[in-house]
Length: 222
Figure 1 (cartoon, rainbow, N blue to C red):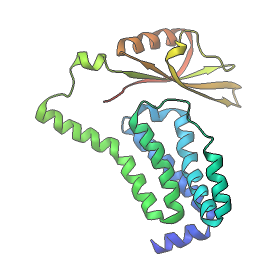
Figure 2: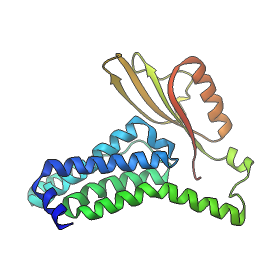
Figure 3: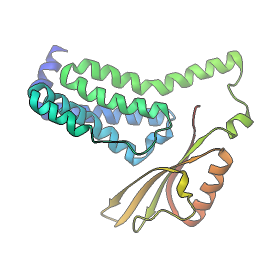
């Protein structure tokens, strides 16, 4: 580990790449662990950029006290306007930043946190399985259908245009990026519904009228 500390301390570009790769590793791992919201392209971008951002902030603050105070003041104007209703999503964002900070100080801690975050969904799924064997299922079909749900969509549009079938008051997040080869714009949308039935109805209408690349539904609190 001392060799790793020295290597990353002497090669800042390698440290930045390492932080980005660890963040992306966590995103891919929790995606395969059943966290469907992590499969959106905007989530992948965040996973790739947040750890290096935390790493660079660490370097800036540690090397120049005056500049660090200015950095803190500049960051104070940043506000997250999109409500994050999934607590685990907020924890993962926090982990991305901590991973980046750790790579600049003690890489072994960053690697350990990345592994822990990566295995958490699978570990909880296994734990839930055994708990269900002991005490039965945690919720009935009726409770499941009435739980708050998120509909995650990725659609293609020739221009940034949200389909009229989507209720605007239920949208909690929108992001987009352009495919330069196809000259199309891919739009990621997260929509909040009170029941599974509402989400399924909306998804059925959108799929029949628009070019949907991928879609998934996540029950919050499960």
